[in-house]
Image (tube, rainbow, N blue to C red):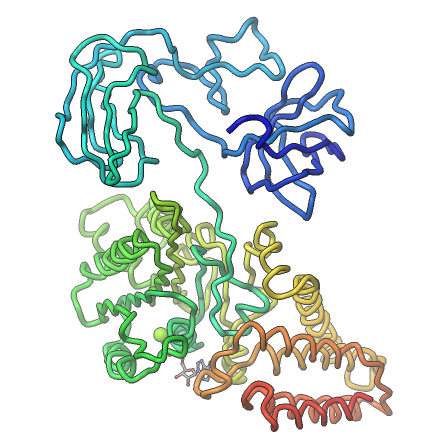
Length: 576
Ligand SMILES: Nc1ncnc2c1ncn2[C@@H]1O[C@H](COP(=O)(O)OP(=O)(O)OP(=O)(O)O)[C@@H](O)[C@H]1O
Ligand SMILES: [Mg+2]
């Protein structure tokens, strides 16, 4: 690529080491750019894109940087250079060789080569002409200090290749061609000892639609994201997971029933083969794998079951598919770990779980994710596990460890379950960290609407204020508070009944497409914004109950059907 093809821009604002650049062409997340500061080129990475502005973090001091300074985008992400000669070096975080820098202090804008290009390495071939090779296969070997350093086919080389030639044993520089391989079309590629690889794992950004409103609307999970559902016994973890597994927009669904009751698992076995896949019209079971390890099976096998599920997931992800992995319940998996650890007489950690429980859990969660495959296609594993904390104690080790690893938290509340407000997800306690990702926000703005995020945050705020109003009404009595408190309380109840509560056993209500979720949130907020006049607190209650009743019937009606529209007109009449 020559310089003329590169996207360029101009500095439009400087906030310490965050610089806003107005760009004239396409830029991508995590792309590298150089700010042409008069004293030195400053390297920076794109961390957020908003319209024509790229927000870049500068890896150097921005002292003296002015608005209008030109910026050139490099077209690639932050990369690391790999090859012989890395061992025994001292690097900074950008892989600059510190020994090559002048003086004691690092100079601004000075970047040094991570490898020594002139050193001759003793190379001996491993592959032979005619060998079939793929990424990671060993082509040859050099002695790096005393370590045998394998020269591999670069991980970016995405296909099957045939070796045409390999250099004879001898001394070569890192940039010398040590092999030539040909792809299926016969095109030849030179292989050197130095390769470049991406440093960062891409962050997930695309929403995984589940059809469950309290998730998609308020706390969405992304394709390749992680989440967990903690809840005391009988609060609806299994029902919620089944709803997600039936409805989510995934290509492959893997259900690991880990230490659950045998009769529930049998139910799944009986139920799934009959379920229709709403997206393809075929049977849901055709894209589902169930891995069952019920409570009456040997404990040790529970540990294996979640790993089996993950390994199958990784296999399908490598085919470029969207995999959804559900484990019910990871607490029983942790109990298996505990049992084995105790038998091995290891030093016990908290509640006799293994000391390294939290790293075992986070290692498992980190196997989920969004990946770019060799050929540029993408695949993902979205992982959602349930946790059954004894007595609903969210401070116990499994919940605590999982909270550190998973990015979405869907806490089920006993109070909500007791009052039959299903799914019993506590919308105030729950969160999705993905909502804070700029790329997820941009995706939502594009996919759902530019005002969507604002509406979601408003709905959360209404729920919180409603809860506060309820507490005050409980303390001071219905008559002891101004009427606005009652209104505030019912604003939250409206969102609770219409958006949060969802009947997992109703054909229509069970799954709500995103478009319909947007429509309903628009409508609910419009009702809450309407300036209604009330005679007293019982008038507030009666009218809101009436409105809620109509909304609930809407939820049970086919979207935009005649009945749906009639109910909507009745609501409009009530808020006139
Ligand atoms: N979304 C829902 N709609 C209607 N009913 C629900 C819903 N979620 C849960 N329930 C009710 O709650 C009951 C218990 O749910 P579930 O078996 O999922 O709980 P659990 O948290 O998995 O329990 P355990 O900890 O014992 O495994 C269900 O049998 C059902 O009656
Ligand atoms: Mg259960």
